[in-house]
Amino acid sequence: MATSRRSIALAASAATALTLGATSLVMNSASAAEMPLKDYTLTWGIKQSFRDYVITTGTMAPNGTITTADGATQAEKNGAFTFTGGTGTYDSTAHTVKLAFKGSVTFKSPAMPDGHGFEIKVTDVKFDSAAKSVTADVTKNGTLSEDVPLAEVTPSQTMKDMPTKLTDKAGELLHASYAGAAGDPLTVTAPAKPPVTPSPSPSTSKPNPSPSTGNPSPSPSTSTPSTPKPSPSTSAPTKPPAGQIVDGKLSWGVKESFRRYISGGGEVKTAGGATKTASGYDFPYKSAKFDAKGKKVDAGFGGSVQFLYTAHGIDMTFSDVQVRTNGTSGTLLVDVKTAKGTQNDVEFATLDLAKASYTVKDDVLLLDRIPAAFTEAGAKAFANDEVGSIYKPGDAIDPVTVALSLDKDTALPGTGGTTGGSTAGGTSTTGGGSVGGSVGGGGNLAATGSEVPAGPLLGAAAAVVAAGAGVVFAARRRRTVEGGEQA
Image 1 (tube, one colour):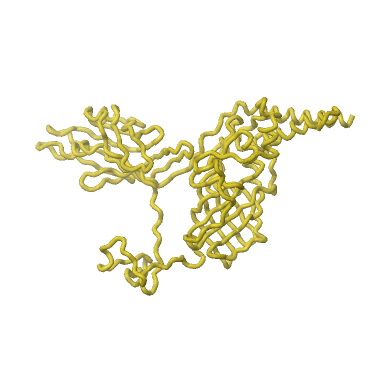
Image 2 (cartoon, rainbow, N blue to C red; image 1 turned 60 degrees about the vertical axis):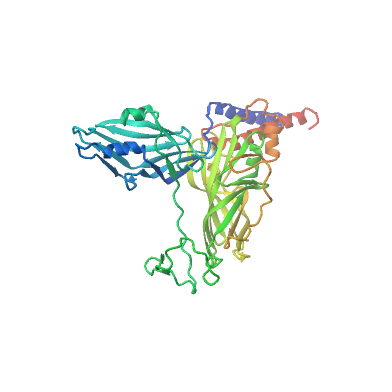
C-alpha cells in the first residue's frame, strides 16, 4: 500500500509539472535583449538647399529665419542642427538602435511678394536603424503631423555621416522638389567619456593646474601642439595613484544547473564585450572604487548574457553586473530582463568574503571564487505566479571572481580560456549534465514538448522545467524498479 501511495504521489507531481508546462504554451517569447541608451546626440541639417531657401527669400522681401530651442542647436553659417538628450535602446541581437531626441527647429518665412509664407516646426526627432529611418513631429502653419517619416537612412557601424534620402512626405511638407532627393548626411554620436586629468609631476610644471578647477591652464608655449611628444623629463607617471583602478573583469557562471538546462536545446548569447569561458562568462570592466584600508570595493561591469530556449519560450538576460563589498560581506547586483520587463539593480546574491584577501599583488586585486548565494530578490527572479521559484534565499549559485588592476599594462588572471563556440554577440552552449540530460538528452520530456515552462515570468522557465523534468524522470525510474525491470 505504501508503495502504491508513493507511486500515486509521484504521478501526481509529474502531472502537475506537465500541467504547468502546458499552461505556458500560451506565452509569447520575449524580445531580443535590449540595453538602455542615454545622452546621445543626432546631427542632421535636413537639406542644405532648404536652409538656404528659407534664409534667402528674395530681393524684395526680408529674409526668413531659422530658430532652435529646447536643447537643439545650429552650427554657424546656417549649418546643420544638433538634437540632444537622445534616449532609447540597443538591440544586442540585431545590433540596432532606437533613439528619441530633444530639441526643436522652426523655419519661418514671411508672406511677402517674394516671400514663401510658411512656418514649419520640427520636433521629437527619432532615429531607428532597424527601420532605416528618421522621423519627427512636423507642425506646418499650425497643423501638426506626428511621426512623419522625413528620410530613409543608410545605417553604418560608426553611425557617422550616414546618407539620407528625403521621403515623399518630406517633399509634401517642405518643398515638392525634395521628394526622393538626397538629404544632408546624418550622424548619431554616443556620449563622450569623461576626460582623465593627469596627475602632474614636479618636472611637468607647464601647463600648471588651476587651483580652482584642477584642470590644466595652458600657457602660450604649450598651447600650439595638440599632442606634444613627451620627453623623458616630462613623461606622465606610468601608474595611477595608489588605489585607483584602471582595468578589470568579473567572472561568473550565474548557476551551473541553469546553464546545463539551457544546453538541452537552447543557446546562450553574449554581447557588449561579455565572453563565454570554460566555467561561465567574463564581464568587461566599466568602473571601480577600491578602499584598501576599509576593505571596500564598488565595481561595475559591462556586457550581457542572454539565455534563450525558443522551444520553451525562455528569454532571460543578465547585464550591468555590480559588486559591492564591505569587509567580509558583499552584494552582487544585476539587471534582469524577462518577458515582464527589466528589473534594474536587483540585489541578486550575497557574497561571503570571510576568506578573501584585499591585498594587491603585482598591481592586481583578486577576489577569487567568492562564494555566492541567492538573496530573496535573486531567487524571486526565477519565480512564476503559479508555483513560485524552486530556488530559495540562501541557495548557492556559482562563485564570483573579481580581478581589478591598478596598471593598464598588467595582465589579468585567466579564467580557464574561452570556448570555441562563443564570441561577443554570438551563440554558445555548455556541455551536458544532470539537468541538461534529463530535459534535452534523456528524451523523457523533450519528445512531447510538455516541459514548456509555466507562468507569466519567462525567467522562471528554467526552474519550472528542471523541477518538472526531475519529477517525471524520478517517476519513470521508480515505476521501472517496482516492476522488477532493470533500473
